[in-house]
Amino acid sequence: MPTIMTLAGKSFEPDLPRRLLSIAGEIREAGGRAFLVGGWVRDALLGKDCRDYDVEVYDLTQDELVPILKKYGRTNLVGKAFGVIHLAMKGLSLDFSFPRTESKVGYGHRGFVVHTDEKLSFKEAALRRDFTINAMGMELPELTLCDPYGGIDDLKKGLLRHVGPAFVEDSLRILRGVQFASRFALKLAPETVELCKTLSLADLSIERLFEEFKKWLLKPGKPSMGLRAFLDIKLNEFFPEVFPLHDSWDALGEMLDNMESMRRSLADVHAEVIGKAKCAPLSDAQAMEFAFAAFLCGNPETSLKFLERITNETHLLKIVPLLLNEYRNLDFAIVDNAPALRRLAVKLGGLKLLCLLVKSTPHEFYASDDNFPEKLWQAAAELNLLDSAPQPFLMGKMLMEMGMKPGKEMGELIKQSFELQLDGKIKNAEEALAWAKPQLTSI
Image 1: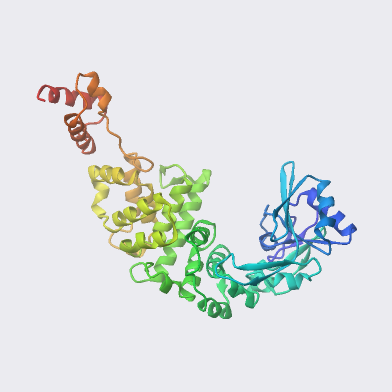
Image 2: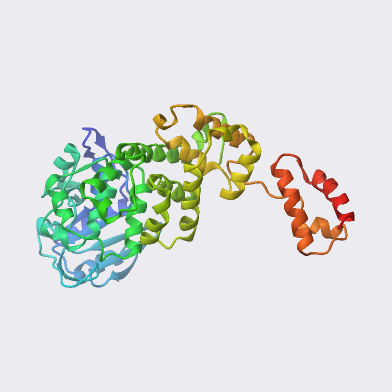
């Protein structure tokens, strides 16, 4: 199995399917060249395994390549306009494409004319790529690096630099720059910043905007670096609904990094304990709610307006503004007020996200009681409010079994019982029934 030298100077043997190496050998025997391209190359140089194998084939036509691929599995031309051939094998699927050029001829991300040309050089074909770190290739089967635009040097310098003038043809690349800056802790090159400032996101659909924001805020990395790029490009002017935390962008960046650290620790089954309190890992929906709440915590009033510009996800539109409003109005004394904690859990469906948001907040904002985040977490845990909210002990079915008919009176009785339960005066279903019996005689 071939090895490569990572940027850290270590020998790395990437996880490459032997069938891919065998296919590459046959492509070479037929007079062609096969390159792994895109994110796989970048990740391998960073010493990370990536199983997203995109192969670009040079010096062979489609008619010459397909017979080779059919020896290994079922082929399907999935991207006719781009000349992409999907190869499905047992336990493995691969995409093969041909070098191409793209020309902007219309509005939006679909306004491109694509020309495939197997005779292009790797350098010519890589001109269509967005950033130098994504414009590298490794020729198979030996994994010989091809880096025509200095992607390795930029990675070493911690820079994210655009490849060429074609960058401006897709304005989504502005946000791709933000999420790459976050994922790989990179700073935008000065010339890339200036180029990004000339572009507008106005032609992008909310679906495309949302996907890039999710990658920025949810993929592992250093989100504060994404925020730095966001501000360098002046995207805060395009999204005026995003505010700094207590007038400090640095504080918001710290909060985003803390959020990422919290989320990562909860995803680790060996790190499900914060303090002495266990809680379940975050669901995908909760992780998204937590991430966007942290990003928008600078101004709860504008959070809904921002979210409506980038998504139709109903759970985000509902939960994030509600969560942020409670976060902003949180009273330190609540840690000693069990009834208030129970009612807050009912409102939010559990207190885990609120506790995580508080624990992600930079410590200087709790100067009067820097143990408040831990106290809140422990108080919620002791009341079993992290992962769920209290449910009424007294149910309609129980009252009907006692002879009560459904109606307004039943609903009012259940509501009164639940209020007493939240106050801690009713502790189980038996006590709820005992309380309800004398109420029935008076109705």
